[in-house]
Image 1 (spheres, rainbow, N blue to C red):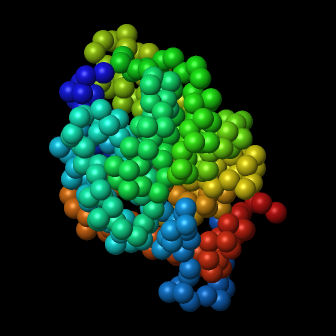
Image 2: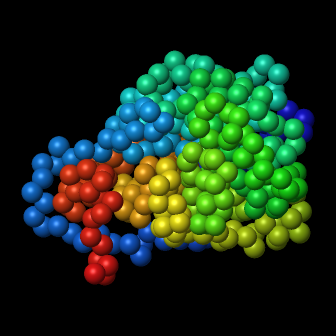
Length: 345
């Protein structure tokens, strides 16, 4: 695809995500069905609750990932800079948006460069390319370039078959994607992460990916941004809009995806994302089996403002998560993962 067309499309995606931030998702993330048993005697010091962890050998001050966001080159540069500044300030992980524009731009890195590593020298930094590109010529060379471009610690391969199916310019031939992922997992020197983009990973697919050598999974379930709805909003014809709109509520709710993937893959590194609204949702994700919790669209408005605004957003989420630990008698994340739920006994 021509570079200008691709950049324009990414800009349109960003505009539509911003436009839908205050609308009710077409499907619930599923966390409303999960309720913690309140502990009236926590026997803890709130300030001493330990939220620390690690990802790919690097420490995390909290179990959070600023999930992949994208946009046209001009806005993307500011967004990525603000996200990197906040990630470093808070000690949390950062995953960049699709690097396709940067890889194909012939010199325009769209804000994705070693500058991100300079801004965030100590935190896990994850690159990102699309699964559909793996059967259209992308391979080890592009994967290495994506990581080297940002001095990343790992590479995300994002799965978006529904979005591609309803997008007029979509890549619809997905034959051979799993084999391509397996080939890359074997040859790439860095860990490979596979994530959905909002329709969820099933236990069956998660197991296939782990067996193929993938190092970590991000369920990215339904309940947050619906890329079918985004594509419906940018459709050029009533027919295209009607096709896409029918799938606005499609997918596996995030809570269900986390629980089912954890049962099927007990030893996997598991990231829970997809409509995470606050620190209570983040705590529920961890209780259901996530090691790490990702958030993207909810922080997008802050990312357009400044690194300080992004940091303030996540500081609120971290404080909420800490209070959930306190009010469930959980001194750390391992204890939170076993905290009693109402109706579970």
